[in-house]
Length: 235
Image 1 (cartoon, rainbow, N blue to C red):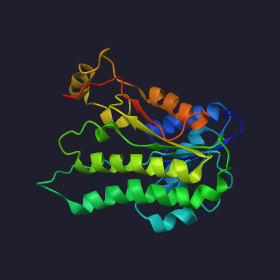
Image 2 (tube, one colour; image 1 turned 180 degrees about the horizontal axis):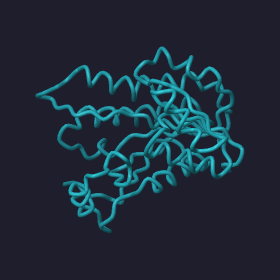
Image 3 (spheres, rainbow, N blue to C red; image 1 turned 180 degrees about the vertical axis):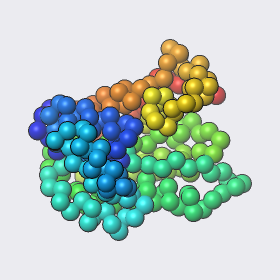
């Protein structure tokens, strides 16, 4: 299914997005990855292989997205994984940080889909996967805006799955993915999270890649919210 397909990964220069790009290229797809820094995106793409292209795209600047994606033609799969972490609470609320995160993950995501919608074949073989996060269901201290926008992702997916059908649209909510760069050097915290999973292990980046590929390619799944967290228990 992945051979000779064109996939765009928004936020594909590190972590889960990069791991997904590497897998897709290895399986024969042509991949466009994006990052805020154009030169870094190009360098990362070169490291993935000749079927990868890197471009600069800033989700926090929705007015620039159409120009950034102007060269993209057919899109068989679209993965929206670019995000910024935010620490916000109701009592110490930073509206600028909150506004930036909401712009990135709601307006930026929707503008990207708007720009590319007519380049996605209208068939059940086409898929869009939008990354949310398990904070939607299990808030933690400082997750106010993160939890809020991830709730918005579910509303977005439900509406888009109806509006864009037969193109399939799904959400994926990763939990704590301990082998991603964000968690490097944070072993005490990871040990605590491992203790909350029934099997004593956390989900990995490759687990999320497998789940993303399932959502991209399974013709029977749309408007779904898939959790990849090894059933991590609330604290």
